[in-house]
Length: 390
Figure (tube, rainbow, N blue to C red):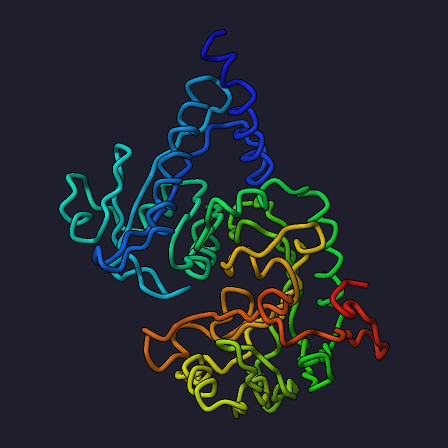
């Protein structure tokens, strides 16, 4: 059996997956796998190391696909020093580096000493057509903003592990059908009422103001210039109205329970911001307060409706995938999703973040969502009830 015959099916599948995600293209595209490296060797972890090894493996497979004639695109691998926080801006002046072989430096010191030319991120944005970011810390927000400006496409995969690979193999057409439907409903809605239960008993409700906003369908298909989003994908999301219009405060209000280190904390929300925390345990209160140490982190930044759980995908302990399984609410930065809370809104650049809380029984076992009801044209439309979409 020839080398071509031996690898034919495997690499045809790689090429077909890329075509599905990024869209068919007649001319060759310039792909780059983007990875971050720890600032110090002490900061590294086995999962982070394995992700970098996975990037080199995918690079070899993609390059072999080109050699075997299954793809006419080019592939390169680039690394940069970790920014240390999810969705923080990339280093300014941001530097990256091309890795000409399979050896990714293990920390920033080795990266800086690597015998290759440093490249500013803006040069990368201008040069490559498609970026795939296999990173420890999410680069979704900065890449979303840069993609709109420079016209490249980006798939961001922060915290990706080999356990998530099955989620890349689900039916993208079925995901697209579901999330486009829910995104359309979110766009039409003036608000959403979410009823919560704690330990099986009704506890509280939260109203989210959805005026002046549009729902977004995260389908996993990035077939237009300027598009960027997470892989695995499978959610519809919307940013609640944050009150930026003069004399028009946000109407988001209520009580949102979250589970922190095994204990329930109640977040009191007014005008789309957490204004008070209550907890049965003092330690849990202190843990939860850490999430809101910067005033901008108190901003309710997203209502997401993840659908992968209904397709049999299980949580893996990483928000990249887990938020796609079930309804979730996030705090903090929102401008990359269509809101107005940006890095400039934070008192300290080190606090810039977007934190998700996923209402799935394996992630917050003491809390469940009784229902999610959208207000559309003064009528109630129930979209979620007792753990399942309607």
